[in-house]
Amino acid sequence: YIQSMGLLTTGIYVPFAMLLPYIIAFYSILAIFEDSGYLPRLATLTDTIFHRFGMHGFGIIPVFLGLGCNVPGILAARSLETKKQRFIAATLIAISVPCMAKNAMVFGILGPYGVGYIFLVFATLFIVFVVSGLILNQLMKGDSPEICLEIPPYRKPDTVTVLKKTLMRIRWFLKEAIPFLFLGVLLINLLYTIGFVEWLGGIFAPVIQGWFGLPKEATTALLIGFLRKDLAVGMLLPLGMSPMQLVIATTLLTIYFPCVGTFAVMFRELGIRDMIKATAFMAGTAFMVGGMMRLVLLGI
Image (cartoon, rainbow, N blue to C red; front, side, top):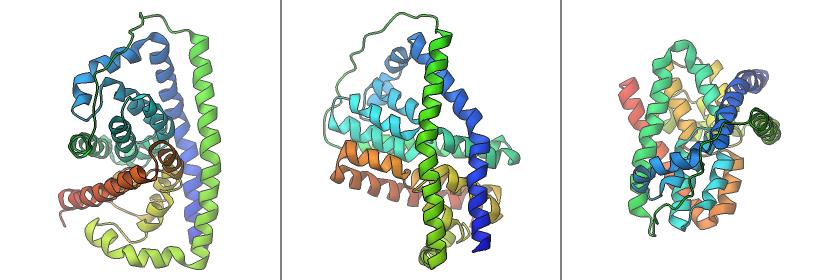
């Protein structure tokens, strides 16, 4: 139990020590893009590509916002006209668009091993995004209307406005992240105490070890990932995994389920039936991608 407490302590302090610079940088760039009038132009440029995924070019806006946090990304998907577009956008964001906290942890954990390992994670997520979008476009019934946007003129971003938007989003992120972080720590400590984590790890050991090529202790991090992905990635550090195993584990944490906050928003935006469909698609994708990554990267 003492060792588990040390593991959780590492998971608490590592994320917040490392993610703030990345979060500040991302939200600053987002505010500049918004204030300059570039985002509508970006939607127009990506229209042809996103139509192949069952959306029009405005689908890039929720994806872009999802890089900061999946919750506002999925909320932004409500601006898409049809149910098909909203479902595809929300599912793709949840399954293959890592939030800023998760991005910071990927850089922090894999950075010491070289840029190549970081590239493997994001290249895999990009492939998953493209393939999943093509599949969902074929599976989901409905229309994907053409884009219709007003293109504002370019303007010089106002420094004060950019700073206000950045500070507002950083405060919102910390307000949303901290309660779930400590709730997750409390819950996992309780699960450790009653032996539930060890029991569940034994059940999933054949999949975690045999199919994904990870130690069975990684089950704990995967469970915590439902509450906070950044905390879960931080808990992978003490497990002594190889760089390739860390690549597989961090990729799976992004794909298999979103955090509980994102899940709550998906339930509200999509409804119970579509959320179940999206969850089943995530689980199946994670299972296939994890196994293929083990075969390619570990060769076992």
